[in-house]
Image 1 (tube, rainbow, N blue to C red):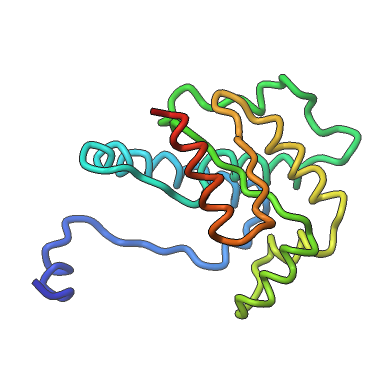
Image 2 (tube, helix red, strand yellow; image 1 turned 120 degrees about the horizontal axis):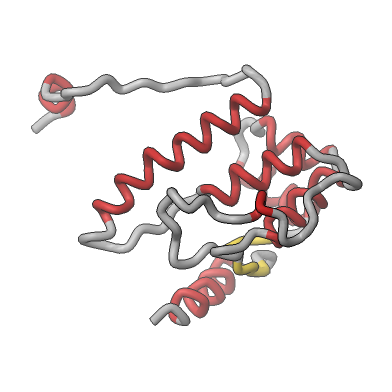
Length: 168
């Protein structure tokens, strides 16, 4: 079946929102809603195979906290802001791949293309990066399992597999 035939059979609209410039709170709410929507698909897919995805609730929350706080008023460890929502599908494991800003910049240049607003913000604001990292580290239920991603792709994959194998 070709794409046009499939499109004719669509029962619901397909909508994309680009360049959401409505402000940080609305942007994060949009991302959070996306987490709930994709959770339904994850539940279905996990009936047949494993799901590994890039970013979910922790990312939305960590960026929101880092954007809306300063170094002096970031929620303390144990604050409810770091808790997973009770009504959202919880992953079995959250891997947090961390690298220094220097390595991140080298890799960004190697990829080419345009930088996102978040990437530009990370590059220019050390205190923001520190708050973001701290927010990820304070997440709980599930926590973020940090992996040093400064090594080769093979080494990072090996470290990730080790963490995944601990689930079995």
